[in-house]
Image (cartoon, rainbow, N blue to C red; front, side, top):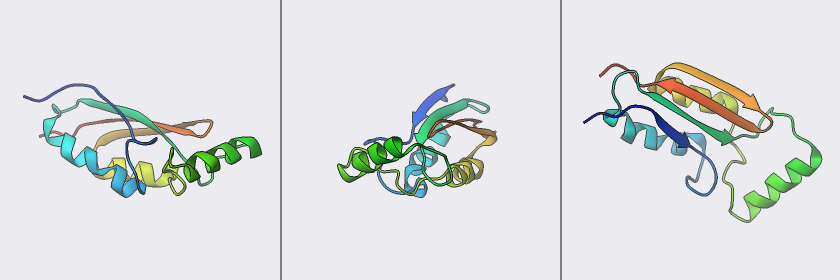
Length: 107
């Protein structure tokens, strides 16, 4: 049985490591998705995303405490990981969060 829309958050304590490692669940889920099913979610990113000093300090604190694992996550890496696996990829930024949506490839 293949399934339709799927929400997926790639940050917080659920997934550790770089975007490369966080994208592995997409590989496991892809065979379960119906052709054209929507995949969407969000990830807190670093890189060139502007943030205030207090926001950066809070993100650094959460990273040190192990709450976040996103010190090296970038919008570009997220976009590339999605494009390797899906079609119709859209990635946007709201504050320090990259949101994304994509469609499952035809099976």
